Image (cartoon, rainbow over all chains, first blue to last red; front, side, top):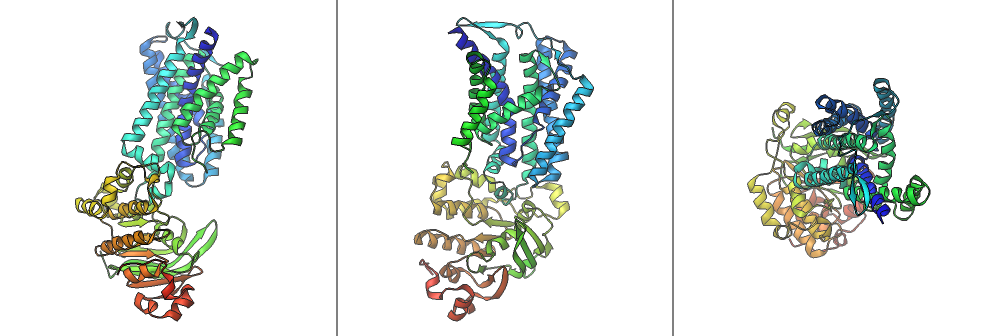
Length: 291
Length: 261
């Protein structure tokens, strides 16, 4: 019983990280039709810069962590905004070129990060609480899982509130349905594009700092490895569906944890099989709109 | 600046997926009344409207109040005071009626100094326009919180019309507003457009000749992507042979639904 609880809890924590990456991917694709392969770089950059900022206050302190999370989110947002303005906007309506430029950016930035911070993972110093576990019905659940779930829930709530109660949220919701008609109402949808990139980048940057706490290291490659599963989550949830991304994050992560434990480390395989199944049975994803 | 024509289209061509579907089309829309664009199915009427707005790849000149706008983005053209009611309504199905309307509201003067620099005149939403929309579409007021996707076709058309009428526009581009609607709703839509046309010129794509007869003063007939006839609506509609030749229907049978005159 305690094993199942542990797997569920760690699955939820991992799902929180997936969601922080997938939420941006899903919004960006839903509104702009852009598969953003550079999203993992926003995460990695947010992690490195956020940690560096946190270390100025004090490695392994709550103040350092909070500052790190804030700076990580801001860094992710700034990097994403610059990417949208500098690389995506000039290629407006040229989706293949947009995708290719994000692929190029992801490769180039990983090399750049390796050049700056070295290719190998570096250990991070966590607060005592985050480095320990909490007993839940006999299961020793890592405290990072609680932090991830809390952050993911806060980001989900924040994005939902933003989409529901602000004019830009209204424009984004409408743009996901019919971008051309939004422009035909006299709205410059490009501002919404930049905003969606910034919000997605902020969530990824936040996810980057949180990932360092769960993994206990920071590495130039951490964004790329999380991005693969975030893409799978986005497709399973339904491209453009935030709720779909949230549900699929939990499903994929929990399934991965269960399969890794009970089926001889086959978590990744099971997730890919689930992806194939969803694409066969419901190509638009769990909550995506049919094409 | 406002001349005798609110809209002038000169040598407009439009391409969809690399294929030219509208060829060298030229016509004018006077600053009042309804100008109808007629033609058989698939001859390029909708593409002409979409090309005016820059929603499809285009070449040629489009002048709004004498100012060339063909080099501008769609949203800039619209903010110059163009209301668009697209074919098939294109309401945002997941948004409520109220949200659909809120999205269409433009602040008069929005765009600030940038708008002033670019010469963009913001023709925005005014209290009088909101009152007009509420008066014309009382059903939409009652259904403000309902998702637009759950409305009937007629109700969705009202949302689409209301979005265009909310703003103090220089011209309305209205694409087949009666398509697929029940006869009673067709009459309602025609009445709404007649009311709108008292304050704003309308460029109307329409297949229903009874609606055309009810509303339009002038017609532009398009065939195979080219203008083949322009002139007073009466002149065309009173000539059954011309109607048959240009539109492939008889004047009496073309309007499949009754429209109160």
